[in-house]
Image (cartoon, rainbow, N blue to C red):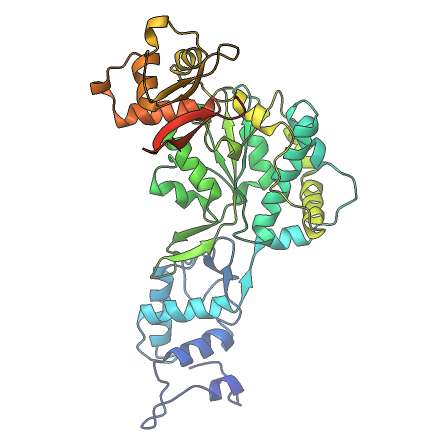
Length: 422
């Protein structure tokens, strides 16, 4: 029997019954009414908006449950509970139970990270501008000061404003064993941190983002050019599509995490395009315990800065120069650079070509040129052996050297020109 009482509770009077025998109907309305009001179920289900998981606040009226996450097994147990003679004796499908539990949980949402941040009180002492010099041993300058603010502010923004634009990633550089990973882990708190175990080219990579605030992408120096491209795409995404554990369909969820890269190398960018997304921080030694001791105040300051309208998108001074130092220069850069500057052998310059223009003698070197002529005369690759892959490689080198491609002349030929050099 339902809850024992001399007087039928008002909520139970709202149950829809069969006219023939007065038994409770197996309907979504009845399931929801019971799960929201019965003493065994009331307030039990909640939806974690951060992890998109349904959990239980206590033990349900059946053995062996894991309250931390609602599963299909729980749906079966609940369906069996409704079918007991001593409860309601109704036959309900576990799929209906799952849908009703989701609806009930959505009325009782929680967000542990947001609740943590909004409960902090800042003491007024600024720590973000010296975050990396104080706890990672970096040089204190305008660049590291700005990156410290951007980093913490963007992480807070992703929680208080899910899906907001965050298209940069701090990359902690430093020798192995100084504690980079442990510092990041404890800064974000272990339950809200994850180290991506899969390549960003794998679909499983995105599984590590669910319910995480800080996601570490390790071994940046070992990534291929394609993998770095995927990292850039992952950084700039503002939402993720996946099927929640309780759901039947994939849905789109606003991004709530930020990324932190780690590497033991100084040259890990194989493609200069998109390098602005990476903010290098040269870590010399990590004060993990000191960082933990002020962790709450670091995030409290970030919350205060966010609420007073500070932005996290403006890159710090000298960012491009610092990023460029991490670029792993292509082996073709040197011969191409020399040839463009007029330092190639005399025989390597075509005497008369509509696809090549020189500067005057005072300036010297090449003024305009096509990719094909660069490959043939700067690199010595025969025209018949020009591949699309090699053309793209030359294009990347030229862009890194500061050249732009434009259509020139009546034939609209695509030629390279160097900005600011007449």
